[in-house]
Length: 70
Image 1: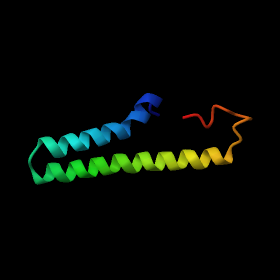
Image 2: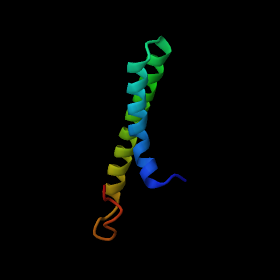
Image 3: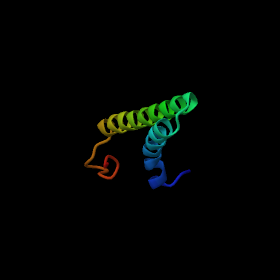
Image 4: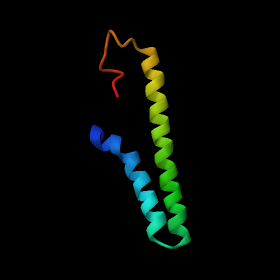
């Protein structure tokens, strides 16, 4: 299990690494891997956001206010 700060920053690191790989190295494979890394980071962020929103709709915040905090 990853620590929460590491878990939360991984998609941002994927996006930053993808942009850095695509912009600093001028080869076709760097552009492809940069695009894949950036896309993966955005997909992970989207899925986490979607999952957290649907989870918060099911849980009553009055009973457990810490569950739905961002």
